[in-house]
Length: 193
Image (cartoon, rainbow, N blue to C red; front, side, top):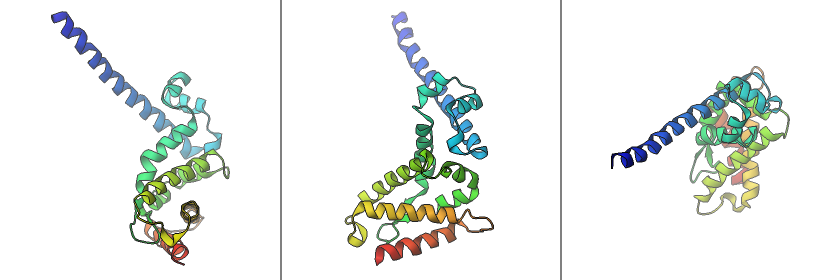
């Protein structure tokens, strides 16, 4: 009987160690990726650069992420999208104050991801914003302004990104609050008209 209880407890401990190791490895990859984003454009970062910075092998990287795009998507979903909160009943739909404050506090990250025009970084950001907006619109009884939802989403996302990019212009001293007010004016006027 003693033998059986030992064999049952070992896999549980091994699973716990594996989970802790997985968490540490993912954290190392995530930190390396963010550190690289502070110094280089997203489109120039290779998986091998992330592996070298994180001190992990390529096989380890691919055991956790299919690609650097998936790594970016996971970061956006985990960190950035929760910064966008719904504003039920208001024509601008989103409270982006915290998102704008984050963009202002780490402008090089946003510039790095959005560099390269409509490259994979910008596509990932748009896809994450669309997914977040889908969640928010799904909770509403009827779409604002009786417009097709795809049009509303494109308008809101484009406006949000335009306000964020404008806030990063040289000599701009926009705050998250002032950027939110700009967003509210633009989207509110567009969807209320």
